[in-house]
Image (cartoon, rainbow over all chains, first blue to last red; front, side, top):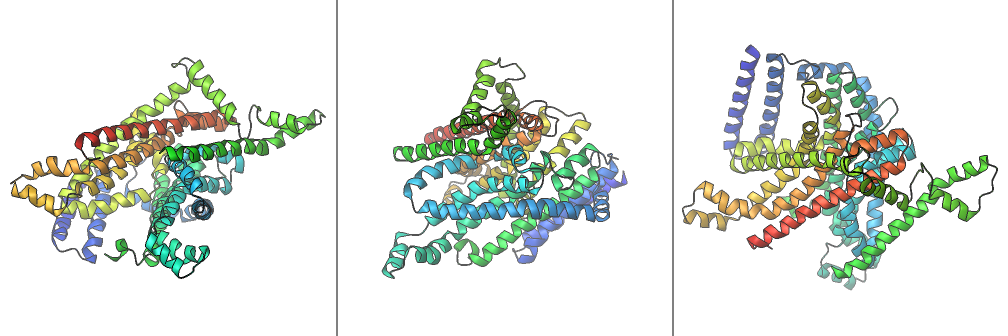
Length: 279
Length: 287
C-alpha cells in the first residue's frame, strides 16, 4: 500500500513542478528540466506500481532490478553492443548512405532517370523492407555482414530520395550566378548544390539512423552468432530473463538516442546557415 | 503524370532485367555443382534455364515468384492454411487494429500537447526520444508478457503496430493543429468563439492535410510492426510467420512471395488512404 501511495505522491509532485516550470518563460534550463522531471516521475511511478501491486519480475521487472542487472552484466552488454551497433548498424549505415549519395548525384545528371527512379524510390521507401532480413541472412551468413546488408537496403531509399530532392533545391538564380562565374559542373556541385542539399540530406540521415538500429536488431531474430542485441533479446525472452531484456533495451535506447543526437549535432555544425537552425 | 510513365516503366524493366541477371549469377554455382556431380557438361543456355527453375534458389527468378503467388492466392481456397490470402488477412487485421489504436492515441496526444503547455514541454521530447529507441526490439517481449497475462492473438501484434504508427500522427497533428495563423485565430476571437468551437471549426479542419500525410507514413509503419510482431509467436500465421518459416526451411520462393505480398498490401493500404484524402480534401475545398 505504501508503494502505491508513494507512486501517486511522485506523480503529483512531478506534475506540479512541471506545471510551475512550464508557466515560466522558456529558457534553456526549463526546456531541459521539464522532460527530465517527467522521465524521472515515470520511472518512480513504474517502480512503485510494480512494488505496490507485487507484479512478478517475469512480467515487468522494476527499474531498480533492471539497473542492478545492467551494472552486473556490462561485459555481455558491451560485446552485444559492438556486434550489433558498431559492426552491423554503423557499417551498413555508412555504406548505404554513401552509396545513396553517389547514386543520387549520378541520377541527378539524367532527368529521365530522375523521373523514373523517384516514384519507384518513394514506393520502395514505404515497403516493409525489413522483410528482406531472412534473405540477407541466407546470402551473407549469420555474422554481422548480413545485418549490415539489411541496414544498407533499409537506409538506401530514404537517403536517395532525400538527396535527389536536395540537389534540386537550388534556385535558377543561384545556378545562373555559378554560370556567370564560369564554374564547371563539378565546381557547381561542390560549391553550390551539395551544400544547398545538406538540410535535405541530414533529414535523410536522421531517418536512416533510427532505421539502421531497427534493421540490425531485427535481422538478428533470423539467425546470428551467439552474441548481439537481437539475439540476446530473443533468447532471454525465451528464458524469461526479462531484466536482461530490459537492460538490452536500455542499451538500445542510449545507442539510438546518441546516434540520432550525433547526427543532429553534426547537422547544426554543417547547416548553421539554414533558417531552421538559426531560430 | 503521363510524362513520367515511360521513365518509370524503363526503371521497372531495368529492375526485372537485373533481377534475372542476379538470379543467373547467384544460382549458377549450384547449377554447376549439380551438373558436376552427374558428370555432365553444362552449356550456357542449359545453365541459364537451370538457374531460373531451381527448387530452392538463392534468388528465385520473378516468374517463379509469380507462379508461387498465383498458386497460393488464386488456386488455393482462402480458408486453407497454405493460402497467402489467409496469411495476409491475419497480418492485415492486426495492422488495421494497430493503426486505428495508434491514430487515436496520436490524435489524443496531439490535442493534449497543443492545448496544454506542461504536456507540450514534458511529453513532446519523450515522444521524439521514443522513436530513437528501436522499438521493434521490444516486440518479442511484449508478445511473451502479454501472453503470460492471458492476452494473445490479435492485440499484442496490434500494440506493436500502434507504437510504430502513433509517432507520425502525433508529429503531423501537432503541426496541423498549430497551422492556423494568428489572423485566423483572431477572427475566431472576434466572433466570440469558445475554445471548443475554435477547435472543431478552425483547428481540426485545417489540420486535415497534415493528418493524411502522417496517416500514410503511419500505415506503412503499422504494417512493418504487424509483420515483425508475428516473428516471435513461433511462426503460426501471418506474413511474418511465412517469412520466418521460409527462412527456417530454406524456402526462398516462399520468402519472396510473402515479401511481394507484403509490398502489395502496403501499396494498397497507402493508396486507399490517398483516395480518402483526395475525396475528403476535395469536399473541404482544400485541394
